[in-house]
Image (cartoon, rainbow, N blue to C red; front, side):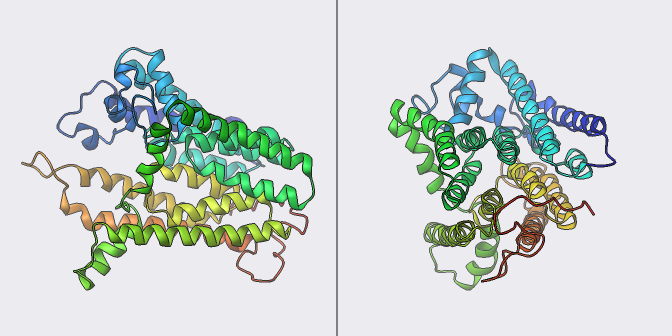
Length: 413
């Protein structure tokens, strides 16, 4: 962090978070009408799901209303609704709390030892302003970043608790827990393994058990929803099958069968990644924290859904894992381009009240696939940094040593 004073990062973070507020503020008191939320780029799920989840009537999530998000996010939504009266107050309080999570994430990256210029870059790039208030992902992001910090500082219980809580908000922080537990077992550190298990149970297991006890059907509906989702148009899956395979095989059941095919391919890829990374952790050739981060990036690459705000997950992970800055910069640039195109695509052409604007189809396809390619490139730089591409060899000098200890983060340039 040499050369970048902390107050410069603090000012940049304040500007970035303020920009996030200014971008979404026009939607706070504007009814859903004439696609205003898309035309003004101020769309937020916080507003869209106010009535959709019964929050306007204080519906108990997972009991009186199904919710596609994990339990901590659903309870956050419900808690804010309970504390406020009306949509305006609900959105304001939600935004304030999410902005606090964004500030906490920035502080966590600084405290994690990420080079100051890269923390400053996190504040300057458009990721935080355009996605920070679109959904509730910053709850999970701040938990994951501080889980990383506390693990590096030798606090496995609190680290596992935060990773668990993050997993109860959005799934990916929970991916760290099995690798941390596995590494502790291999090191015969039963005390650390027990703390990881306890923290993970309190943060991840207990909230989900409570929700399942309150209503098994309501809790299980979340996972049924995600299992049944069609591959999203913002993933390469949709582009590949829809634009390349469908013309070649027009008689294939593209509406249902290929969804199951993608499910199988994705699951197989994630199982193979689990074995690949888990074996290296078990052989003490890879740090469990790094394995969890690498697995999360792999999940983003092969998952059948990529919601725009998932970039909020990817950027801090890439910074913490020391990805090369060039593909990282191209990744956030392509993501910003997709943001600009996305809402033009959702806005009907002049003279129409409904439907997508097909004039933006090709631009959307280009931005989506460019984003995926650059994320894959950035992930590959992480793979190479830790020697993960070498089969049967010890990691190189930039990877963790034979004891799985920490290594310095790379320089920014």
